[in-house]
Each structure stands twice: as C-alpha cells, then as structure tokens.
Image (cartoon, rainbow, N blue to C red; front, top):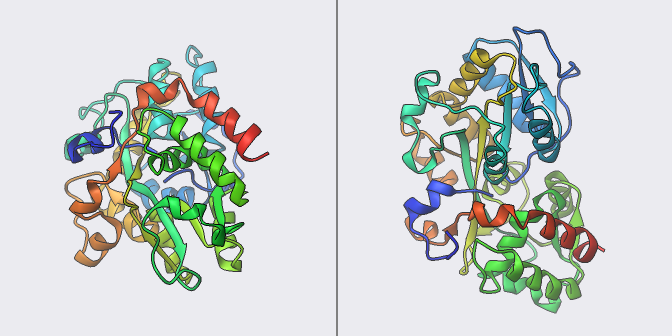
Length: 346
C-alpha cells in the first residue's frame, strides 16, 4: 500500500516500522548453545529482559540469547540459509526486516499445527513466515514543560524556535524518514519525500543520537524538545517521570509490528516453535503491554480498560496510522541509509 489513504484492515495487515530496541546484552552465554537449547536472536535490553521473565517460563525450553543488531541477524540468516547448524533457532525482527528475510528464502513456513496460539492472531497481522508479537506506531513526542501547545504536525519542527531542539534515534533511520515524508506529502512506498523534508530540517540543526535510550536522556536533560518515536517508548518514558506528551500528527504516523520466525538453518525447530507459541500467550501479551506499552496482536489478550486506553489507538487516530509498502521499500533501504549517514548526519 503506497497511499496514505489506507484502511485500518489494510494497515494492520502489513503494519511495519518497537522501532529498534536496546542493544545491550543481558546474558553472557555464547550464542551457539547445546542442541536442546533455543537460541533467540534479539536486540537485548528491556525487550530481552522481558522475554526472559515473561515468555521463557511459558515456553518450557532452555533459552540462550544472541544479542545484536537487526542488520547482523539479517546477515546471519542469509549466510546460514543452507547451513546444517545455524547460529539461531528464533530470529526476532521488525516487520520490514522480516519481510526482507522472507524474500531471501531464509525462513520456515509456520502454521497453527506447531504454533497453536496462531489461531488467536488478528487476521491483519498474519503472515506465512512469522508470528506477530507486539504492535505500536511512531508518533510525534514533545516536552510538555517546554511546549505548552501540542504540535499538530512534524512541520512544526522546521520552526526556528526549535533550532537544535529536535532529536532522532539513529537506529530508527528508516521509520523516521518515512515519518518525515508524511509531513512532506509523501507515502509509505518511497523515502524520497522524507529525505527532502530532512534536508530542509537539517538547516535547523537537528540532533541524531545513537539509541532510543539516548533520545530519552536528551529529553530528560532538556537538550531536545521534540522527537519522532514509538508511542510505546513514549509511554515508558512517561512512566519513568519524563514530562512528555505525544500526538498522531495530522499528516499521519508510521505503524510497526515486531515479529518472530524460525530460520531454515535452525538446529532446534521444535523448541523454536514452543518459544514462538509462548510469545503469543495472552497473559504474556498483557504483561508486555503493561511493561512496554505495546498493543497485543492476539484476540484473546484481555487488557484492562485503562491499559487498553493507553497502549491502543482511537478509531480517528488509526485513520492516520499507515503501514509500510514493504515490497517497494526493501529495494530502497540501502539508498536511504546512505543518505542518512552521508548527508543528514554529516
């Protein structure tokens, strides 16, 4: 879908864009574990911590985490596709990257025969190659103590009064460029409008930080007042006491799902299926919503009303939350990364 006029069902069917999670390792175990272990490739940090606390006890399998970047996991999936003993049994990726991995023929087909909880997944999130774990969207985040009137458009960031006060997370370059493009009349099938907007914004001296956590620290210190970030992250930062507000801007926001899959080179596909099934456990989905602010992807997750109001989106907001056109964007990813590194950050 390349037009912002996306229906809610179409949106959720291909929703992409927990931008990325922290990369600090939690466990000091080696990734290549014993054959009975399940090696889970993930980002680390809070997300990995919760996988260990919430998902692992339900899965009933011993787990070792292989912590690293999404690009590193994609590289492993490609280089190990024909290996007899791959380094991962479960690969966790953002939806756009997972689509990339599927197109490269690196992932096993999944079904509810081996992953029973798949029957409870909302149809909009289903794919043949992955399970959808959690869902959110990139929104406009601002410091309520510095900005009394909520901004309604990312175009507000071009105002000279916000010079040096706009910040980005480096690891969210793709979603941030699409988000910027919506403010410039763009759609979800091209980065062009986004790079044009960012070139204009560069004149206002925006700042790029190495991680989502660094963006939070910049908000806390007052170094920045505005950013584009996953709503779930903004909720976490609110819970941590930061005086932040967030809005789905009038031009729209970028959807995201975070997914799990089984590499074809997995050594323990049975254990991997058990872990993926546990990721869809309804009680665990509620716990992730409470801890991280991401919405569930299964119908049988019974969220309390107050939690549902926090992590979900209103019908009006959903009309302005758009999903990636993954097929078109995959071919442009290297180009936009090159622009981000050599032009926008330079």
